[in-house]
Length: 595
Image 1 (tube, rainbow, N blue to C red):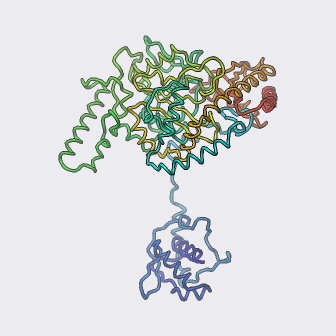
Image 2 (image 1 turned 135 degrees about the horizontal axis):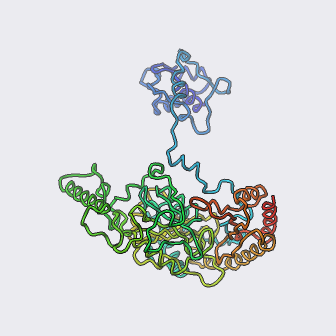
Image 3 (image 1 turned 180 degrees about the vertical axis):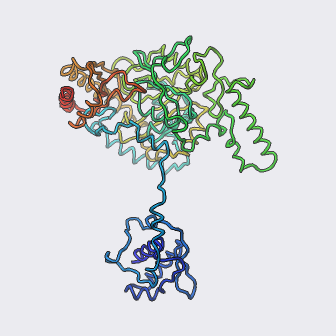
């Protein structure tokens, strides 16, 4: 009853039916009229007075307070609806209440609605993630098989991890036990080189990519990525405001320009693509570029902002820092004799000049500030970047002051030959940001990503992580640490390598047997999916739609290109699917190609 009384008075006051200054019945009178206890009405009046709808004074009847013209909806209780005379609840009979006007309601209906930002509007036109992709059906790529996962062991580790998190309560967002356990695994299995404080955990690998991109890119900066390449990386780079260029992939990985040649968009085998600084907004992290990060030069925010200055000494310090910041900006434009920093990528706050030496780019604008690669298992072609190409990539990034974003998304699974170490392990001057995920090695429900960042960016990444709320629950971190420490993680990876290799061979065999004349298939040396390229002129998007209607999932190769597609084909997963499931799916694929 109290809730209904409050709701009716709120709605009537906001709609103008109870004008400002209108007296309401006393609690005794209204209680008698409604047939409820007086305390019920008194409590309702008290609540309305607390919310600012009524003015209550000793010895006087309640009076409607002066209100603005608002829609009543925001004030309704969760799950409640406006009471009406026919609703069965009590209604208020207030003298004069019918003399109010509905003008405020009409004005509210004419009020402009919030408009989406340019970034939000651009999301509607994004083709990642693929919207017409059915979930949980064969041959969905990138999925681990939950039927083969040791759920009981994982549950025990989660319980133990929760107890550990409770016993060692800490403000640290990235728990030390998981840092040490995962880093030991990555050092041994992937050859990374880092300290525990450089390792961070995020709710997904995409979240880690997003933070990394924002830490090294300003709106309008050039960024390169493989084409075809990972749609999530494209989204992260565009969200950071990058001018995106796709770089073609050959048998050795990303095809890099020769140092002796001038490079433009055509030379790198792709087309610029991006929303630009006017179309992609930041979400509060732009100020980190000049926030006085490790080894960097602070902007206004680096000394707490103008409002935080107290006294002449702090003002002088602020002025000196600002002069230094402007001097460095002049350095970028070639207007100053201040010598450049030897390692620009290890300076997150400043934007120093590239390492001295020959530069393959005609202008600073053409040089990339960030390069995204998947060197251990190129997405989606499965190509392994050769050792000479890796060295050339590091050299190119060094010459141009660029950061490298390395996504090592499913490197735990390798079937032919010896696995190649991560590119991050070859980095000697702190420019590679290494990103990985537990979702591939374990199950999709464990959507925890991680990033190893250069030492100079560790403090800045921690601040960005806190400001954007990209935090993993301590109990989940504790469970993951236990899962690794007790050997379950490594044992599961070894077992799944055997199973996934058999499934890869099964799918490749089925495709060659039934569709060998229409598909070009190169078995991947690792990973969780196969790329099957069309030999004819089929449109892969059309084929994917036919497969979806038949309950089969595939991703079109053409949607992975930055700019104009060069080839058409299908991205088919094998890891999560058993032989009989794949056999049925291949029959549907044959029918879709025949249609």
